[in-house]
Image (tube, rainbow, N blue to C red; front, side, top):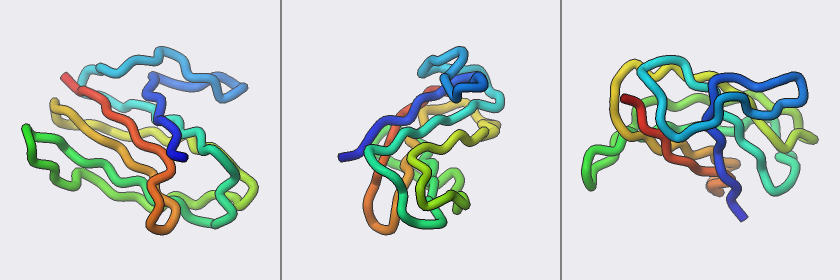
Length: 104
């Protein structure tokens, strides 16, 4: 089952989110994704969609190198435009985590 994405200002040494929220100013936001199980692959795709009413457009796509025994990712993203965004992490065709953040 898909897990959620946590949006925060940073993470501490134990990878716990600091400044967790769903709304941020235009800035760098740290994304923390916790999967339900280990990845078993070397790459996870992160796709960020900008939501405009009922339309979504791809804002950014990144292939993130991971270890096969990992089950989480911490990744900073620069959001340069105000708006609502959905972030999906996919392992192959499967969405393993998704979350929505508002940048204002």
